[in-house]
Each structure stands twice: as structure tokens, then as C-alpha cells.
Length: 263
Image (cartoon, rainbow, N blue to C red; front, side, top):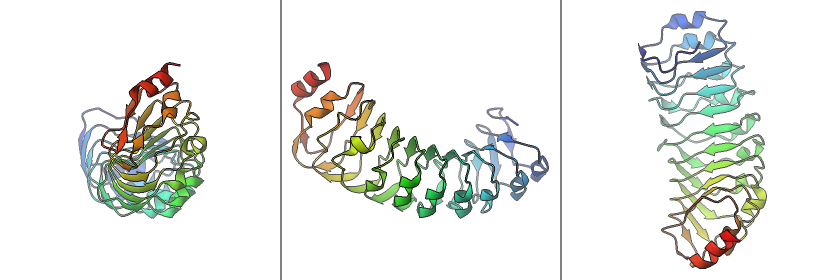
């Protein structure tokens, strides 16, 4: 059932839970409000649930993980409160998870590593979400995109060292810290976008970038790297389109970097 962007409003009727044959329920981009009826959990065949861009409130149902066939779950851009239900991490075939821009709080638990088929993970713009990025994220070998920007996450990002499939990594505007791995590109060879701006990374900026052959967007502004030049190796990124490094302690030899980009 696809009723996205239809100008609908009101609350969700509990009777919707009687449509046990549904495989798809897409209500995104409407003006629904109120809490989600628990009867939604009767839709055991659902593969796609998209309730994004509405005005839903209350807690995400604690048993949402009982919808065991879900491959796509988008609850972003609502006003959900409370904690991320533990049962979400039981969705063993889930490939897409988006909880962006809600009022939820707490941490990202280590059991997120159970979502072995996850390809897209968006948990951004949640200022009450704190704690570290769990090491078990490295178990998610299918991940292509991580959005954890605009939260209050802390700690380092060493757990992302072996994410071979990762193409898009958005971690800007957090409280992350530590030294960036010197071999970041060798461990993340398929990166297209790397956003680490507005954190507190320090130490020497990695010198070797040439192995990120598909990198198009590199944004490291607003950190606390050691004083020194921008590594000339950045100029050897053949697809680079956006480079954002302001508000660091770096100085730029534009001639050297630009010459590298042209040769």
C-alpha cells in the first residue's frame, strides 16, 4: 500500500493491523500525527515500512522487531521519543534503517552488529544520542552508507577500519576524537564521501590518500590536526570534487596540491 505524499492527515487507525496480507506500507510525506497503534505489529508479512516525514509522537513500539520480514524501515523525520527499541536489532534481513531527526535518546548498542545484511544506516540529527560508536559496527560487512552526523557521539572511529564496502561516511558535528588512522584509504578503499568535520580529531593528518580512488567529497574542517601542510597526496585523488579543510591548524600549498590534481 503506497500512500506517500498524498496530503493525508489524522491518526493511524488500529484497523490497519487487519490487513495482514500487506507487504508494503508507505505513508511517508503526509501529515499523520499521534502514536503508532500496536496493531501495526500484526502485519507480519511487511517487507517495507516507511512512516517518514510525518508528525508521529510517542515511543517507537518496543516489539517492532517482531516484524521479522522487514527489509526496509524508515521512521525518520517524526517526533518519536524514548530509546531505540532493542528488538530492532533482531531484524535479521533488514537492509535499510533510517531513524533521522527524531527526539530519541540513549546510545547505539553493541547489538547493532547483528544486522548483518544492513546496507544503509541513517541515525543522524539526534542531539540526545550519545556514547561511542560500538566496535560491532565493523561486523556489518555489507554497509555502503553510514550517517551518524549531528549527534553527540564521542570516542574514536577505529572500528570503521575494515569496512570494505563502505562508500559514504557522514560523521560531522559530533564529539568524536582521536587520531585518524594513517592507512584510512587502504582500509576504506571504496569511499566516495568522507565527512568528519566539526569534531575534535587531532594529531597528524593521514599522509596517504591515493588509494581512495573513488573519493569525491572530503570534508575535515573544524578539527584540531597538528600544524603542518596539507598532504600533497590529496592532490592524487582523481575524482575529488569537494575539499573542505578550514578551521584546522593546516597550511596549504595550493600550487603543489593543484599541480598534483592536474597531473
